[in-house]
Image (cartoon, rainbow, N blue to C red; front, side, top):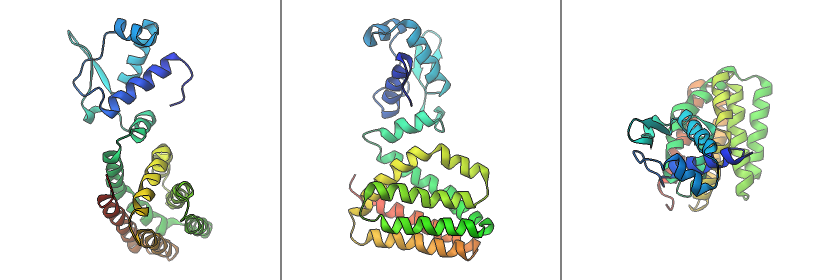
Amino acid sequence: MAIYNLTDQLIHDLGKQIITGDIIPGETLPKIETLSEIHGVSRTVVREAFKALATRRLVKSVPRLGTIVSPRSEWQWWDTDVLSWASDSGNNRNFILKLNELGFAIEPIAAKLAAKNATQADIVKITDCYDQLEKSLGDKDAWAQTDYEFHKSIYDASNNELLVNMLQMLSKVQLDYRFATITSIKEQQYATERYLQFHKELLIAISNHDEKSAQQKMYDLQEELASILANSNP
């Protein structure tokens, strides 16, 4: 999140502590007066921070107990700040794996719709993104960006605003996710070329407007990625 004032800073600090497990679900947060002294801010700042965390469902007020951390299942995971805190965590392997699981559910449908709805201009764009991806193999930062752009071009071609908006909402964590995955791919011999081949086959299926093949190729790509992540160093 962008930090403009003391309230934003406290929201960021407490939110990240909760997401990373430094403050665990069920644990009671320090009293407003205590946090005010610890962080050198006014009680109003602490109250506003508590409200912001409650809006994200990270905490809740319980009578006679105070403000406690909510169960993970109640957290507002689609909030961009929550996603960012999870992605920025030093120990985010579990989060990376969950993003991969999400990919199984969403990406094959996006590919199928792209094969169905893509215009010639869309196919040109996807092809250009693939070419850029191919050129970026030796550069982790460039790979993360071009891989994101390749998948974004497929979502755009799906002609489904909900899917496009979901990817936009996840853009930062998707870039972080891709940077982590290319790191895992680089650890394994031949994985890079094999992974790139999956992208090429996906491009061909979409270009041919083969919905069934495009859906399967994207699913195969997700399976390959899951295998790479499972065999990578923790």
